[in-house]
Length: 528
Image (cartoon, rainbow, N blue to C red; front, top):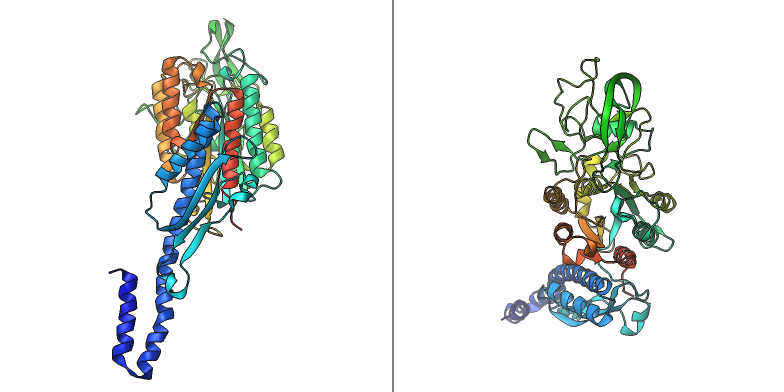
């Protein structure tokens, strides 16, 4: 016998056996009390089902859009994938009185949309005449105007975008370049994302975006302007004076995706006064254990990021506070061998325009920074991944300027308004190659760097971040490098639907459009 029937019978038995006006009045009064108690149970089921429904629709639309973008925009196949993914994802065993979710190509032709109606049965509230509650209502006749899918909205949205600006993004595969098929597509894709999220009419009113361009290094400040931010992250002072062994005659070149063939044939020791810090950072790495740091700890004592040359010389040889005993540059007999300071404070292998930008809601400035990007250098993917996390981490609140402070992790689980979350943190990781550099050093072991990146992603997801990954033109890599890159990106993504392989410049633009549409759509509700 069901719980509802037992409760009804209990009320009936009480009314019959107790007799008298008092007993009957109590029994009648118990009906709304029963409805209230049962209503709480029905409402709890409603909230749970609504959350699961939106999550299933979001996952299905992402899976369908991925199929659509990657496989020739075959709408029939994409819709079938979305429907299958939805059916698999919505496995809560809910008792729906109606469920008519369908999928189609959205009105802009760049992805898949979901629409329809769903209602859940309310066995307890049926006592007071409410037999079901709508989870989603959208007439099928209105679907042509619906280009978004409701899923996982948030009052506040933080999006960090990692952009590959390495030499392979240039038409010649080496660079530097500011235009070309791949780098131009990356700029357009990122610009479109900014417009979708922050443009007029967007539903994401409290959204901010950070931009993290990366090659061998991540640039913190412009050439010659290394100061407080570089010092806060690396512990390196803005100026250095001392004796340095410098090359006076050399040949060859560097700056490409590969190590180059630079060699020095003659050098001398000279004294230099007030050399400027080179305002770029490299991986947080400890020589004593030969290991990356894979957390989002704030930089500081014994947890600094390394400087331009992969060390923190002449302060320390790695991310620790361990003081070196030689190569300090304090005398001509003990000259420094460092590449963290030079006369003009300029970085190598990453253009002066490629300054990372912490969270901001100024679409004009974000797009200005994106449009200025220049590509060359190697692929320090673990570093790019780490900095993407840092721009979203509340542990770095004291590092970033006012207006760029990330929200607390606790807000990711806190309820927002109208059934939404209080906060979502989104990382978008885009690369066109295997991760082959760390600490600023090129041609490093790809599995080593990739393993570090995957571990960082795992920790990011544990912290509550949602990760999209986009593999760009990986089909043109060698088999081994493509396999490594695909493995890294697919494992970094939140799930299979969050990994998109874009085989052409137009596919890259479509992939970012699809992600942007999903993020914006999450803050819209297809309800009347």
